[in-house]
Amino acid sequence: MGGGYPGGGYPGGGYPGGGGGGRRMGQQNESDEDRQKTQELLNPPNNLTVAEAKKDVEVDVFDDLQNKRALFTDGRKIQKSKDATYQEVAAHWDGNRLTTDEKKPGGGKMSRTYELSYDGTQLYETLHLTTGRGNTLVTIRYVYDPPATAPAAAAVAPPTSKQ
View 1 (cartoon, rainbow, N blue to C red):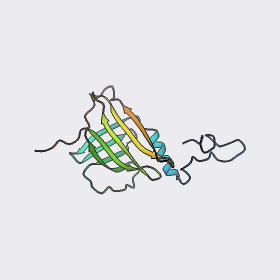
View 2 (cartoon, rainbow, N blue to C red):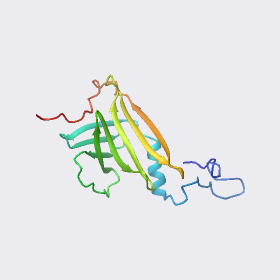
View 3 (spheres, rainbow, N blue to C red):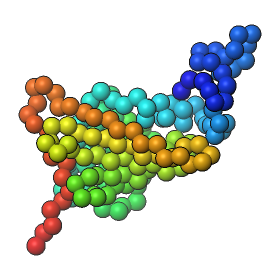
View 4 (cartoon, rainbow, N blue to C red):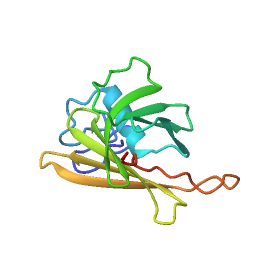
């Protein structure tokens, strides 16, 4: 993220005469890796593919850079991946919404919600996170349209109850 106010600095090199771009309040201890992960949150992929991998247990989300997020809804212990292109995430169904429970870059909690639009033609990905000293809630929604050559979006649906 660029410098900017509050917290000082101008994007791209700081004030004339030297010095860095400054840091925003609350980000003094943020690592380069955390900054990169935050950028990835704010710059979503152009395409997402959502597929049910294991009935009632796992939903896989692939982006256009071949990254895979395995969303597990069975309460299993989540393994920390050493592979930057694969991540396991705890998730649960909230009606027809699939919601994750994650840690945001630099610590703290965040969640993502995946759901189809009412007519099933768009996928909504909504990020919920807190930021700053006041733990201000930030909500960001990304909307994905199906490719022109694809049939109507496949439903991301909660498991059906077995009787």
